[in-house]
Length: 484
Image (cartoon, rainbow, N blue to C red; front, side, top):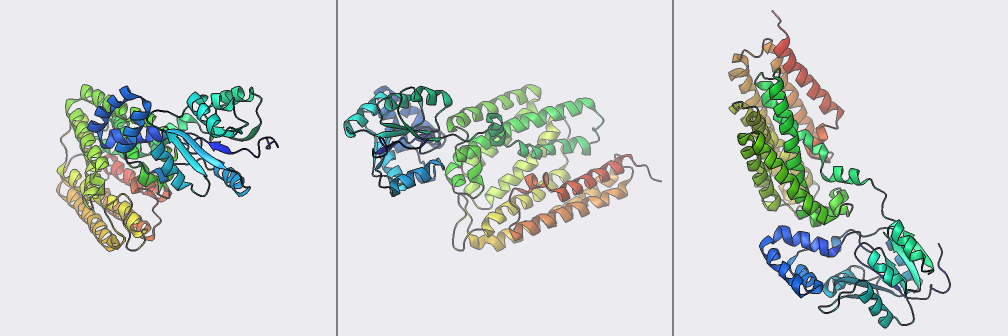
């Protein structure tokens, strides 16, 4: 609906949380504080006894939120710029603290004429914000908001701008009979789809490593072993998804400045940060409890995995070389978990191969980030610099070669001496296929064409899937083809 002559001359007042930004600054700060300073934040909950404003101030002083990277409502900004170019006054009035309002003012200095936030005595929300606006802008104002608390303000405003308001709220606000200048809807997204994306179900493909001991130990005809392995697969996925949520919450600032990670649900504001903060520990605790119930060794192994994974998320990922070592260990530990849940002794050859193989793949992912960094600059959120590219390339290729050598030794020293394989000659194709795939991964990584981690890339790449099928056929043929 177009502007009416009665409202176009009035100053435009813009709310912050859910309106100018598609996230909530208090929720962002609370999640950051809980994860990075849990003990201090626990004690800070007592500030709620002094009122909501005191709690907001505590969170702002405790948290380390990158205000300038918070996701904004992209379709609202062109409207604000056009109004500003027309000469209209635009003010930010928010229930967030004045210090947050000041930071937002710095970010949108070219748009805003002023910014007002809550003080220790007044929480600028609902009726209190309405009273403040009536006093500060006695000649009238147009208000841009999104929530139920804004209804009291729209009732007294000279005009309305909806920015992320639900249909029910819009209907109620329109009943006030005020002119509606513009309506900006939230992105239409399937909530289930948003959650599935946030949980990174495609990463569950890595958990197929749990089935490696099942096949290599000769228990692939055992239905009980299959049942346990499948259960372990889902429990592992549930726990891993919980750690992905925690990792994304910890990496919000870096992800929002990354060319592709900014589209992750939490970083983009598609998933409320508090929902992620609640879901993550529930998923992890639930998976761990079920794992301990099914198999104590598997449960302890999963607990070890979670401890290492969370250590990576909370700091180890910023330590050069140690980060890829931890990633390789996490991949290899999946293989160990597969042995634990079916009560099968773990092959030292398989574990050693896994460590070198996945170290190389982890380094390939890091090499892409290093090689794409401008000279003299540091990879955001990591401890590498652009000049480290020759080092990451050399180490990655050498560990790839080492994994192939270990696979050959495994065949010669273990597989060929086992009675599981009757057509052992087919197994020689295994190191050839793995070697070809590793060379292709590194070629793409060096060209900057590997845009995801190699394992996730493999499940979507036709050539990788074809090589994987050939690899499976070779193992199957070695087991079942009795060629004289």
